[in-house]
Length: 94
Image 1 (cartoon, rainbow, N blue to C red):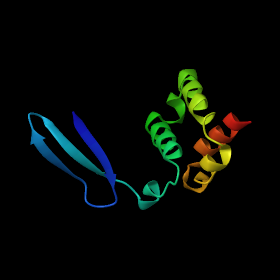
Image 2: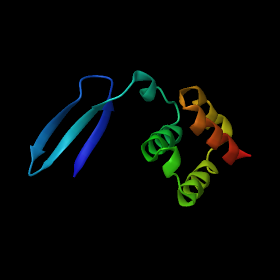
Image 3: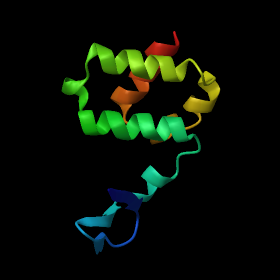
Image 4: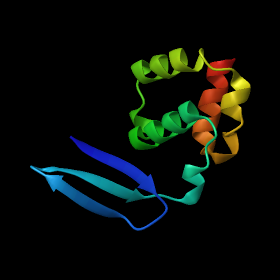
C-alpha cells in the first residue's frame, strides 16, 4: 500500500520497501486550510474527477454524505472552494 500526503513543503517520495512508499504531494496552503474534513474531501474528489466527469452516482453519494452534516459547517469553507463546486454543493442543500 502506498500513502499519499498533501504538503505545502517539498514534494518527495520515501520508499519503505517492496514497492511500498509514502508520497508527499505539493499543494497550495489554502488547500490545507479547510475546517471541515468532509468539505475538504468532497472538494479534492471533485477536482480530481473534474466537472465533465461527474456522474449521477457521484452526485448521489455526495448528497447522501452532505445530509449528515449541517449546511453551515460545510459552507464555513466555501471561500476555499472553486465556484463550480460551491454552486453544486449549495444546490444539494436546497
